[in-house]
Length: 126
Image (cartoon, rainbow, N blue to C red; front, side, top):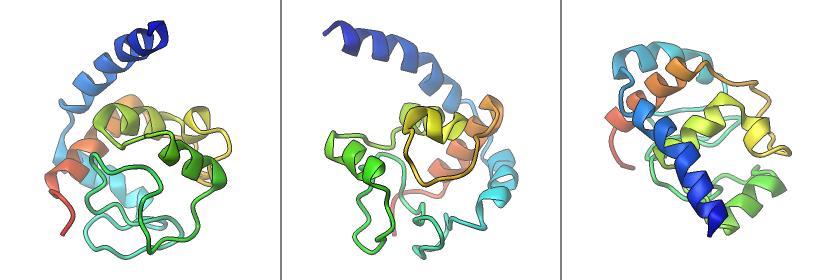
C-alpha cells in the first residue's frame, strides 16, 4: 500500500504537467518520432502505431509483433498508457522499462507534455 501511495504521489505532478502541454508544439516535436511511429494512421513501423495510445494497455496491439519481453511483461502487470505513464516513459524509456527495445533516450519534460497533448488531441482509436 505504501508503494501505491508513493507512486501516486510521484506521478500526480507529472500527469498535471501533461495536461498543460500544447498539441501544436507536440505535433512539431513528434516529427522526430515519425521515423519509428505513426500517430495519425494505424500503421506500424519500426515501433507500434500510436493511434489511440492514451489509456491503452501496454503491448496490446495484436498486429504488432515486435514488443520486447520487458514491454509484454509490463502490459501483463497492468501498465496502461495514461498521461502519467507516458510522461515517465517519454522522459526516459530505458529508465522506466530497462529492457525495452525503444532506443530513444527521452524527451525534455516540456516536450513530453506537448507530445502527450498532441496524441490526446488526435482522439481515440479509429
